[in-house]
Length: 203
Image (cartoon, rainbow, N blue to C red):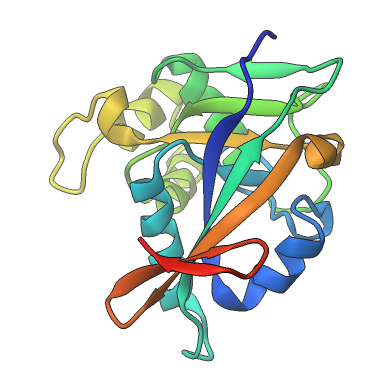
C-alpha cells in the first residue's frame, strides 16, 4: 500500500483524555467492539467531522465537566507491511462489513478471519446501532441494511461525500508511525489550538 506521507488526520474526543493520548495514541484496551469497522482508533481526514465527534463525546459525558477536543495527528511514515481494507465509496460490501462488526458485543471477538491493520471508508449516516438491532430482530439482510445506513434522518439518499470519511487504525503497530501534532479544545464558543509542546494559539 503506497501512501505519501506525512498526512494530517483528526480524532474527536474530550479534553480530559489529552494527557493519556500524549503518552500513547493507540491503546487497544480502550477500543470498543460494535463499531463500524470494529475495534480501533478512529480518525478522519475532515476537521469538521472530527469536531462533530468531539461535541457528541462531550455531550455524552456524565460529569458534564469536559470540553470537546480534536486531536491533530500526522502520519509520518508507513509500517513495512500493511494489511489494509479500503472502501472508496459506499457499497454492499462496505455495508456488510459494517453490519458484521456492529453485531459484535464482546471485546476481542471479530468476524474477520484476519482483521485489516487499517480500514478506510465512508461513515454510515443514520443511527446505525438501532438499525442493526432492527435488522437482527426482523432477520433483515445486507441489502436492507445498506439502504438504511445511507439515508439521512429525513430519508434522503446520501452520497459517499456527504456520508463522511473515517480512517481506522486497528493495530497498535501504527503507534510509532503516528505523531500527535496538537489538539484543539472548544472553549467559550471557539476552538483554541494547543501544540503538543503546550504552546497555544487561536484557530
